[in-house]
Amino acid sequence: MKTFKTASEIASPTLVYVDGLASVREAIDLMREKRVDYLFIKKRSEQDANGIVVISDIIRGVIAKDLKPEEVSVYEIMTKPALSIPSTLNSRYVSRLLLNSKITVAPVEENGNYIGVIHLRDIVYTY
Image 1 (cartoon, one colour):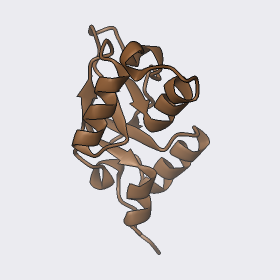
Image 2 (spheres, rainbow, N blue to C red):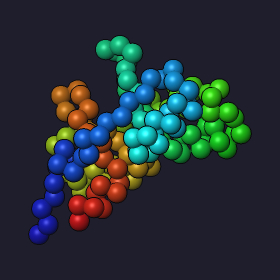
Image 3 (cartoon, one colour):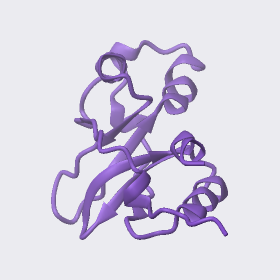
Image 4 (cartoon, rainbow, N blue to C red):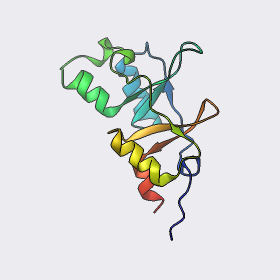
């Protein structure tokens, strides 16, 4: 019988944030620099929620609409709130959660804080 790891055990600790007021151009440059295909958007207050912007958001919200990335703010295309994964969730259920939610990447949350990020490829790499 296969033993499954928890979300925190397979998560990458690389968390990259961008301000929601940043331009999409700045977001693209940061993604390229950090070699990631997602960015998290910090909460503005304790009652706020974190957001996320991924490559498909940029393609759908900017490139496909023939807009200039310098003229679009991240907050205009981000997803908010970002769906987060409990750190203790069994990796078998992490994959189901991501697939059922039709997303490829999500932060791992523990005690209200993000401690890592899981991409579908991380789950595949653990097999």
